[in-house]
Length: 362
Image (cartoon, rainbow, N blue to C red; front, side, top):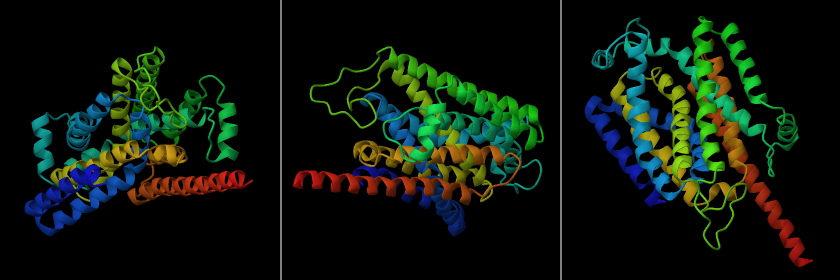
């Protein structure tokens, strides 16, 4: 545990110390709150990351856990907001940074936080549609193990209809744009880009994976429940596109946290420390823990719970285009699905253990 979470704990202590030096106890408290917010919002992200990471070779796992985390910390939590503000306000990178450092009230037009909030419909449409496609792709696929069997099995049957995910996602996007958006055209374009990004990155990864770009299983390799052998993992182009898929996935999960952070503080330094250094590092550690400890194989419903949480998050993002939804609600929904799936997994394991005991006794 210390080896896996040691870096995250160390980075948290340093980040809180920097926040205190930077702005006193107020900055310390805000940094801590943002870190907790990011972890609560991104736990389902860690579960999904772990399911994909298990399919990658050791080299590409290390790439994601090093280079990928750098991109997550600096790219999504620091550079991305600056980029969005620069594009929407027609500002250069330096001008956007200077505007961010002014720490103006996000309720005042022209400030950094205000401009980022103004870009929320485009951000939510892109992220919401990407996550919705991911969720639909999961629930419309037949699986040996189901969690909410009364619902997942019928959905898997109708999922045999070709391109059903695209049809449903397209309908959801049109309804969102027409009913909730002040500017339907911008929401439509952003949402379509989210769908295209998912289809392209996921499709290319699947293409190269199916083409056999993977390691040969080592002798005696154990098969992971519901997936490939532990060592028959993607390398080369297959792993590269899985890496890109994880980066886009992390970006989609980050949208609500980054935008929501401005409801707490508009200071980019505090946001970078809380969301980036504390939040992203703990998400990385949770991902590593899930992979190294084989938690997903032991608690088989966690993956299902994470995807249902993703479905809920996608709906929340789309609805938030026209209706403000508290980040607390977003975080609690994800935690509720993951918690329910975890409890269900424990009950399943106990039930199977009892059955095995009866068979052994008999």
